[in-house]
Image (cartoon, rainbow, N blue to C red):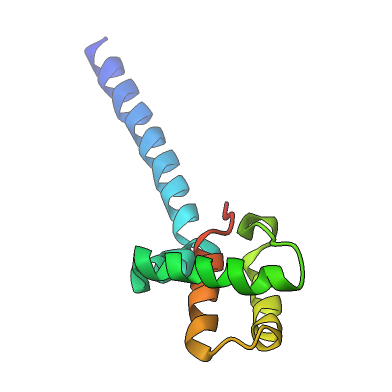
Length: 108
């Protein structure tokens, strides 16, 4: 009886550890989450706020503002370079806008 109980506990623990390991491994390989984390590590809250201000003041002149979560990182990365040129943003301003947008996209 005691051996059966110990064997059951060891088996259950092994199954739980395998499930946890699988979930943790899956979340580490999300490139979008890694990109967002890298941006948040590189820019301060003040810089992201500055990027938001530039986004709101410049981009709103020609069209409605889109919520950063409306598009994927790939979509934003395709749109931002050309829109930054049309808005006559400096390289520094464009980088701040990009950082603000990409730090606020929906990743899953």
